[in-house]
Image (tube, rainbow, N blue to C red; front, side, top):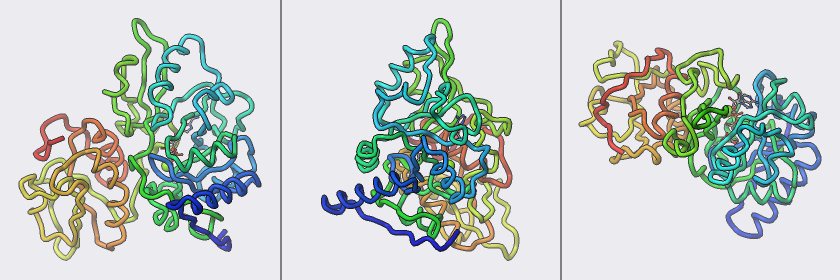
Length: 359
Ligand code: TXA
Ligand code: MG
């Protein structure tokens, strides 16, 4: 699988963008896979209605076929081409898609037969979203087909938020990476399931992401699926307890005193702000301290840098990566979910005060 020449095409000048769009569309039309920027993370895209093309996604990622793919639409008004919207939730689906599409929201809905079973791993639902990334939008508009696109990493690994990170994951396995710069959000889309309810619809967050429970609250009663508490029998089969993991063992602390270094071992710190007063930066003579939001500890900035920082820490070759806990609010919910999955110690959520709690 490693004799494909992988080209990276930039898009930061109009003629370059034009060329990249043309190449991507040409390859996608011919049933190939192409890595594309989205506003969340980079995706590995193929024509969602072409099962043979979709099969190449699974092959390049070494992804097990029980793990279904998100379908991206050219436009929100095309939802009914791939999904059957049940009448009892039609209104809330309309409100949510009007408000958040294009954007980092993925909705699970009953699939139409036109969607190959490989895309949904044989499940009755299809996961649908519309990306707001301008390069992605141009490509999918020119192609005028839904695109199946999981994150462009090898299975179980860290999602890529830059073209270089895609290359590190998939070089030699795919023909083209379209470079759209750093991902805007840096975390994968929020995935929801919707049920009718009275007086309000019930919105279940199956995967936490850039859109927070607060963002969704005006549209229904919002709950986090139990799987966000590391339940393996999950709603999103790809959300295994061990996921998003760096190769280096990662330990997620609950409080500073949890850190018990062993003689002769090397440690690097994943810190929110890097400030000593948070109680973590000064705990040890760290090989490296990666700060998610240097000096300020802001969660949206932290999210943008999250996978990038994990990737850099993984490259150091230390014995363990030590991660500070984050306040589980807003984007902190998604980051803590990912840290718990990646961690070797799987700490339970604590609902209390973290010293670096600032927003
Ligand atoms: O932001 C995103 O969502 C990115 C960009 C590229 O769009 N995509 C992404 O895809 O994160 P992926 O495949 O890495 O994660 C999709 C998750 C997986 O955990 C998968 O199991 C779940 O969504 N999923 C997809 N289709 C599903 C379905 N029909 N039913 C239940 N879960 C589904
Ligand atoms: Mg993924």
